[in-house]
Image 1 (cartoon, rainbow, N blue to C red):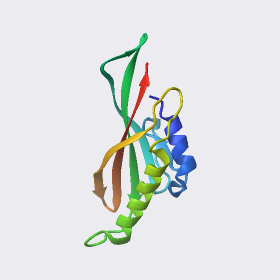
Image 2: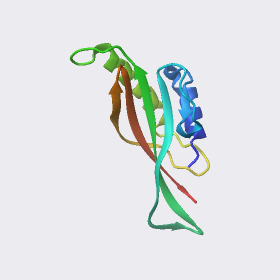
Image 3: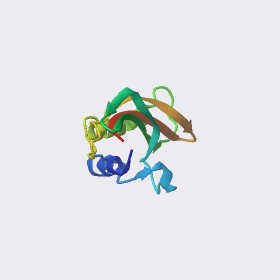
Length: 133
């Protein structure tokens, strides 16, 4: 699956990220936060589904949101709210969007905290699409 259309969509439709959307394999490092990496997590052939000479593939990709916050006791206060605002912008930009090239609309499958260290939180939302290859 090509991730450039997903990156472009986030740059265009999630201005809260300030254009800091990077393909994970690019080797680029965010100059500031918040920022997001887009990465392909897995591809699998859908069991027994063949479309002519091609097979139907389900791809799973992630958007890793990185936000830096000062430590906050208890519920996380404004830092938690900020992270949720950023996630909502990403979900609004991607869910239901069809990247083109015969790729199905994007579906959100869940998310989880990847890490939190020295005020840098990394949250991954995961998505799926299908296409033929």
